[in-house]
Length: 124
Image 1: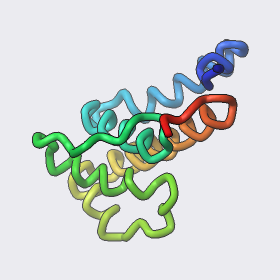
Image 2 (image 1 turned 90 degrees about the vertical axis):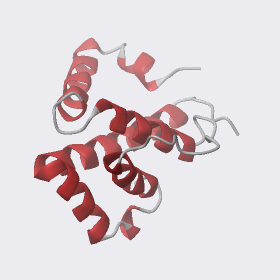
Image 3 (image 1 turned 30 degrees about the vertical axis):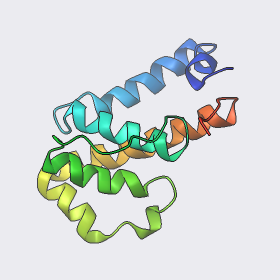
Image 4 (image 1 turned 135 degrees about the vertical axis):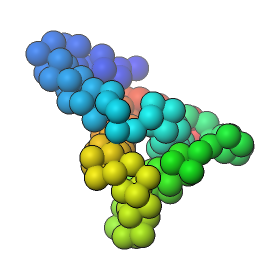
């Protein structure tokens, strides 16, 4: 089975540019790493790449909950994302954080789709 990362390793310059872009939206002070990890796991669950957790960890912050509301909709319900849900993210993370989160979530979704498309297996 080939992953998207393995495929990108065949083109080191492209892999470097992709990694630099992802780092710009995920490795900054706008969104805590634990919030991004929660969202990544949920998007992977939605795509069937990761087994569905039985329940959300009890210690999820308000920021994590707001981000998960958006993450839940990104893969298949992005058109149902409400203005109020985005405003909650903006209130908690600021304008730059809102942009960073939405961009990161979109790329988490894309990465899942690419992995599944090029031969990744889901858990179902």
